[in-house]
Length: 526
Image 1 (cartoon, one colour):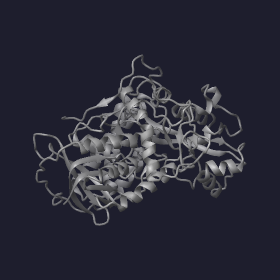
Image 2 (cartoon, rainbow, N blue to C red):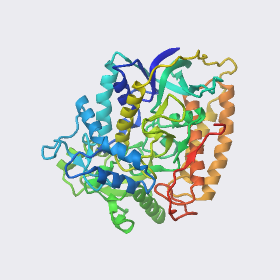
Image 3 (cartoon, helix red, strand yellow):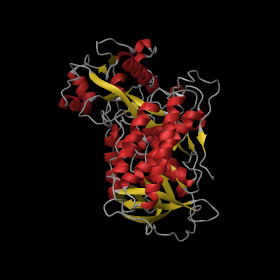
Image 4 (cartoon, rainbow, N blue to C red):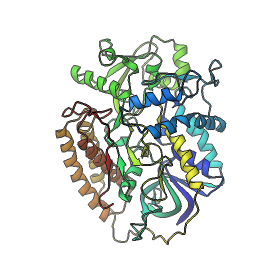
């Protein structure tokens, strides 16, 4: 049994930021199911949106966020994030993050523009911003004496008062599986933070890393937290289409710097779908690509930035340039084959402006959370900003509280289970889930498709719950269990929305209702 003042589950930007902001005052435990830098934050290319230029304003950033969010952004949350954006960036700069410089700009850093933004407000480190930020912060986390990092630990479930038979359903920590030893340990904590990212791996094609299995969302649901807006899954319009390029994203900034989307015959098609053309928000661009691919029977479309010079491309997109070249695509001479892919979970665990959930002493930050910022569609590069601002808010809230007496927590009991006789059930169910979610709950939806998906999810849940009850757990089983829960929440939410709005497009309900309302699900029995 381990004890910390605060337990952070997840090592993305939200988790690392929280750890550093708490560690001068507390003993912090941070668990991550693979290596410290294996989360989605490290994969972020474009940058971080914030009002940093004298030509920009908070009102403009809020307007762009609300427009992309299709009327569902919470105004208070949006204002809070935007108004704290500059301070968040200044904190990163103080930590030593090597953002791309530009002596001509107000702050001395280059600002780029992405789809849905009216101004250049994306601060970045070339085209690998996430890696630069994560690399900088992780070095500080690993050397801080008050932070204990447990790599290769998979969270199993939260330990709550209700599960212990107590009157108050507060969180007391979590059970975690040591993937190296298959031992489940008990971790107690005054405060627990879910910073586990999104659930992109529920889909067959995704830009997300293998770690994005919606663990925090599923654990929070089982613990009694409300979940909101899970129908809004953002499909990034431009994932590299190549048999040897797994989940490689072609940044939004390529279109921001003049990239043109074309059909295989070279015809430009975005102006026919939206007056903003390639700079329209992601949901519109992704749907346009999906439409053109299905209409023409194409495997992919093409993103052409070849009119820019080699020097420009190597300066602004060095990683994309090098990766494509390694695969035989010279982006200075030929277009990039791209397809849409599941990218970002706009919904999640309902959390307030202090990142508090419905369960006392349990917090949710980053893609795991529903803060109200993203609405029906996330504006490009608002995600890392959300991580920073709400991590800071959660840290301040935690440090303002007195410690409470902890009850005795039971050890994990696996005395009634045996070793599984075969693993094929897990791998087969994993593949089946991701295929039918792609086919039935993708960019364009119908009631019939959603109902088919719901029926298959119920069958899978029954099989997985039986497997979970009778056999020793494994990381693969835990991830599958969590993914099926996320799939169920996505489909429940999608079936309850009788309109098309933002990322949720239904052929049965093609119109948008006059009044926007979030979809909020409450777990049975809570």
